[in-house]
Amino acid sequence: MTTQIGRTVLLVRDPEASAAFYRDAFGFATLFDETTPSFRFLHVGPGSVRDPGLWLKPAGDAASARPDSGPSLVLYVDDLGATVDRLAALGVGLHAPVVRDAASRQAYAHVLDPDGYELVLVELPEPVA
Image (cartoon, rainbow, N blue to C red; front, top):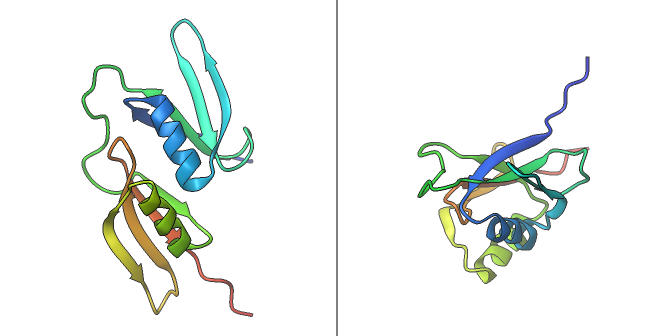
């Protein structure tokens, strides 16, 4: 049996602003964008339409659709320092400071997206040969 994650749904106030954030901050592309009479399907992600990504779904009248506890997404990045710098240039500050864990050799930081979703940015270490 093969199971693959398709989309993670995020309820957002402004789909265009959220798509721009994920594009500018993380290099995501719009993978699919279609509006039917009752739904808008705006999928963004780092790969192709068959790869895991985000469905940015309008939240409607909700003032804030984000969950109140715990991270919403964990994103693996190649270079945490460069990612943090790019986010700072976009006006996005750290929600929690960068941590470099000596035991696991991982580095991570927390930021908030435009809708208040907490993102954990993780730089995984290179495998030891």
